[in-house]
Length: 77
Image 1: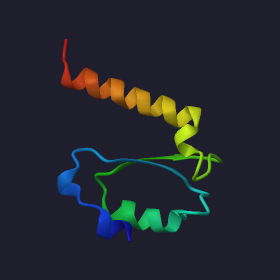
Image 2: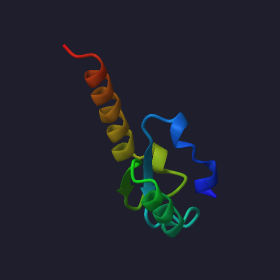
Image 3: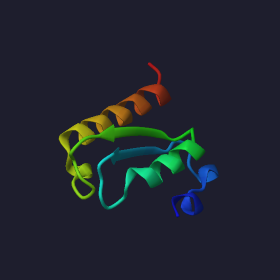
């Protein structure tokens, strides 16, 4: 299902944050998707859960760091 929805030509940078023990979206499916799309940046988090991953302080910090790096790269000093 993920593979049919993913259109890499429309996305310049794709990042997936996931919990490998997620019971709603099992990692086996995501693993196949990631293996067939090696340009996707992925990061595993533990014990955050499917519904709480976006509220996780670790995930939020990582997203902020990625935004700051992106701005720094696109706006050289």
